Length: 241
Image (cartoon, rainbow, N blue to C red; front, side, top):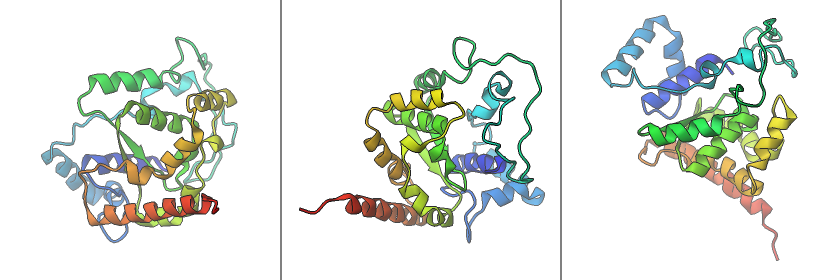
């Protein structure tokens, strides 16, 4: 799950494009990584009035040195080098709760932005492995936006990535999400009283969260696939009398 994928998903949102690394059509990821095409992409964003759009990104907005920089409990690896991420030796005090903590105020931050920022929306940038649906804090933000009625838009790599991860999409359960701290996971689960309903919501996300004004052929094709898989899940769960 590369940083370039996150940037490509953001660009896809700015350009109102569903996929950010589609095969056989426009590939924004490739354009970002190609110096010969990067300037043209930047100019396109400028003349479309999108270059100065503002996006809040957790990795930039939260001081990691006040939370997780010295821990790698799951021995996560760099996706390019496949080396275990080193930990930071800084001695900065860590805050996991309370006033000085920067990672326990997502609810307040999102509600504030939704109230103050015109046309505020949430871009769900889906990684190539669809791990976003197993990460506790990502689920927490998706759940809050859903509850508050914030517009949500899903961006995925390609139609192929959805087909490849079909099984994973069907097996999504909020109870199986992962967090660095068990306390965080439990706190987030406590905010989702009807977990069965939310699990269905996650499975149906690709269908239910798309911007309704978009009507491109590739989006319609993707929605149809996910809808069929979701209906198949429901059918399998029905007990015949």
